[in-house]
Length: 230
Length: 239
Image (cartoon, rainbow over all chains, first blue to last red; front, side):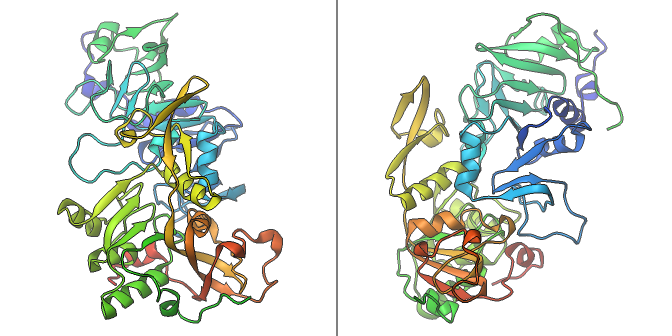
């Protein structure tokens, strides 16, 4: 459809997070990266029992406390105050990253500057200027059964974030399994992007035009439909 | 056995110039603020210790704790995973001026390097950072079809850590998420100094509840009602 306006008709961050939340399985252990991915917890579907892990040594944390109720010894990896759910546990950093690299998490969700068609992820710095900071990102991309990315489909300038080869410094090689974007849901499979869902209003041609690598199909492409009022 | 020292000043008195100092905590959670400030007091009074290498997940926040050490000019090098915070001006200014060195280490690798040092394991392989600029120059090897990066242990001359309960044997518990790097650093340093909020007699901590066994701790100093870094930053305290 030619009347699709990329910047106006794409999904909001909350809508992308909502879509990613629908795929979180009942009974799973999940790490949500700092910032945008943290939004996903808000949209966890009812009836699913999910245990959230944070790098600084907490399993089973819940929402932020009421303002004024913070205990700053009880924080997540983003240094935000959290609360505990019944059955929560504390552990030291080496155990925490054993959970990560040791394959004990079902899902890790991160943000991205770029994702390449072979699953390479660039999400920690955009160049050599400034003060570099990596945190736990290079560990989180290894070990979880599924490593998903949530991101706008394009940069602020409209350039592609799904690319043939990352040009920004890599966080991990061949690590991403699925990408939820503001336009589509895309899997990384055998070195290429496979389109699973797209917004009904955008044509295949228009979607391909804002994607930096070939979008393959493997069976029918579903409609990406999310609630309007998030 | 009695590892108790009565003041934080005594506890940090023998740390020399050029020492590698591990400092526990993740952001403000579990950060031994009183021990850090005792070290700053000593530097201001005597000019020592200086040229320190500080190992911590972060590189200070605001104008207290590690940020105040950096501002005071005691720190030559930071080894950390995330030198950003709500106010990382102290580190940023020195770093961008070329006055402080940075060794950036992925967080899980940082934890495991410290753990390995405490466990007597000189090197190990990890998938983290493979194929990235942080793995440049490091040996790699394939195991079962996947590539890994070899990392070395990370030792220190002294570790400054924060516990909740302690006893004269050096046994420690921690508070909430304040555990983080503290138990690992306790194992990895030649000398470990722990500040604790509650100092009890031997036996006051149920052996089932001990997180750091006393063998890893050399000095214990009681700091009742310790300050919390995040609270100090939020109230704009300058040390």
